[in-house]
Length: 178
Ligand code: FES
Image (cartoon, rainbow, N blue to C red; front, side, top):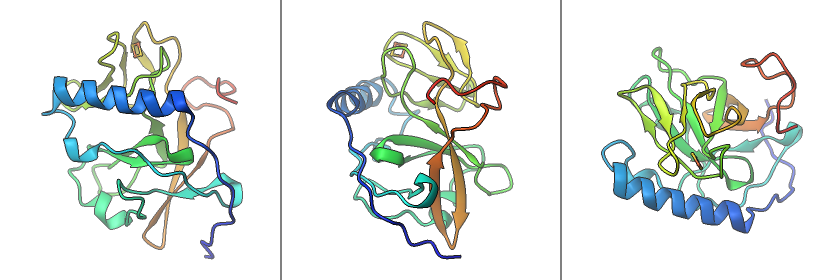
């Protein structure tokens, strides 16, 4: 399959960038054991292709081979630069494949980034205590909405991330971000 990507440049807003940096700093101090420091980065702006797809990148802006992510512990969450350079969690399943849904690392309360807590099996926001289930639904507020999700696919060892615009499988309704 042709994986060439036509060009368009979404931007990382100032607020998103500040939230990313602030959230990463807070989380690094509070929970380094839960959220390896090597995962933090300021993602480069990405180019989008057919269907708005982009290739997942690492901290240096290089495409991340799927084999690199799939080598991580089953059940873990891998943080990559996704659409618009936004930090996006990929889910490594027990069978060493990638879940076809990615989750945006951006709290729906006030936009902080957050770590995955493998012991509690939750995303836990360090800013005001919101907690999310593995699929991004709210377990505890003040977060008002489920986390934004994306399509994830692996093609020729590249990880493609594209917008989720259809029905949210968690709510059975139109996504709040569409
Ligand atoms: Fe996450 Fe407030 S920003 S709980």
